[in-house]
Amino acid sequence: MRGLAIELESMTTENFERESWGGDKWKELRYSPKGKGKKLHRSGELEDSITSKTSEDFARIGSNMVYAAIHHMGGKTSAHKIVPKNKKGLAFGGIVRKAVNHPGSEIDPRPYLPINGEGKLQDDGEERLLDVVVAALKKDVYR
Image (cartoon, rainbow, N blue to C red; front, side, top):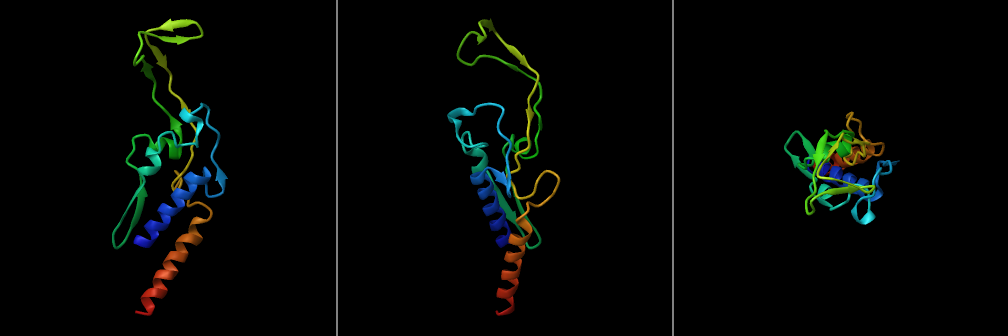
C-alpha cells in the first residue's frame, strides 16, 4: 500500500508540473494570478499540502487545504463582501466604495489528484498502479 501511495503522490506532482490531469490540460484561469506563474501555484501551499496515508488495506491521498476541493472538482464560491484591508475604500473605474458585494465565482475543475471528482482514475493511472502491484507481488514471491 505504501508503494501505491508513493505512486499516487508522484502522479499528483506530475499533474501540477504539467498543469494537466493525465494528458488533459487544465483550463486557463479567468483571472491573472499573483506573479503570473503556473496555474494552482500562487503560493505553492496547495501542492505542498498533498499527503498520503496507508494501512494494510488502503492507500489514500489528499489535501487539508480549505480550497483544495473546489480547485480539484470545480464549483461556485459563496457570495461574500469585499472590504479594503489597507485603505479606506475600494476603487473600480473611478468609483470608490467602502465595500462591495461579490456574487461568488465559478471555478472550473482542475483535477490535480490522480482520481477526479467523479471517481475516475486518470488515463495513465491504472497501468502505473498495476505496475506497482505486480512489482510488489514479484518481490513477495521470491522471499
